[in-house]
Length: 262
Image (cartoon, rainbow, N blue to C red; front, side):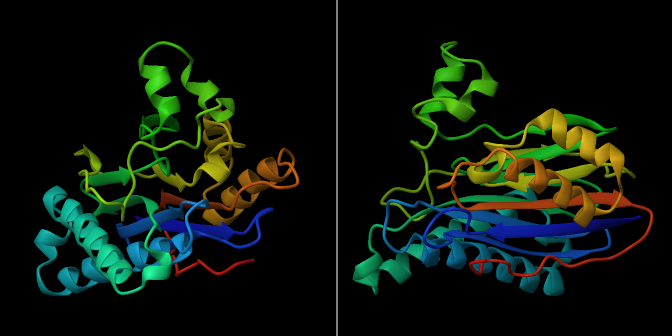
C-alpha cells in the first residue's frame, strides 16, 4: 500500500497568500504540514513558511539517522516546539515582522500509527472505513462556544468569533500542541485531510466523506472539493490550502512546498 497525496495553496480573494504547505510522502510514510499565517499581523506569511519548512526539515534529517524516533509522538511535538523557537528567533532579528505568527497542523505517520498535532484552527481530519474518525478541535473562541453548549460544532463556520484564536505558534508564549495518536495501522481507503479555515469554512465533512468514497486519486478528490468551495466563496474570501492523503494499493507522490501565491 501507498499514500496518494495532493495539495493546494491558493491566495483566494486576498492581496497575498499567508498559507504554506510542505511535506514528504513515501510509501505509507509521511510528514505533512499545513500553516496559516495570521492575516492581521505583518509578516505572517514568513512565519507560516518558516514553521512548515523547519518541521519537514527536522523530520527528514531524523528519518535518515534515527528512523525509529522520527515518528514518535514526543518527537513530533519536539518538531513543532523547535519550529516555534525558529520563528521566534527569526522575528528577534527581523523587527518589522515582530508581531507575525501562524497556525500549524502536522501529521506524521509510518503506516503503523498516525500522530496528529496542531496549534490554532488549521484542521486535521482522519477517515477510517470511509467515515470521519477524528477531527481536531480548533483553538478559537468559537470552539469554546461549542464546548460551553452555546453553538453547534457545525456553526463555527459562521460564528462571529470564528477567526479569534486562543493559541498560535510564534507568539510571546508557547503552549504545547494538542496531540492525537491513532495506534491502528493505516489500511486501504483510509485518508487524511488537512486544511486551513479558508478551506473548511466552505467544505463540509460529509462532502469530504463523499468525495473520498468516489475516487482513490488524491488530485481528483481535492479538485472536486475545491470545486465545492469555489461555488460558495465570496469575492474577498480568505487564502485556502488543503492536503488530501489517501491510502491506496499503488502509486507514490510527494507533497512539494506549495506556498506560492496563485
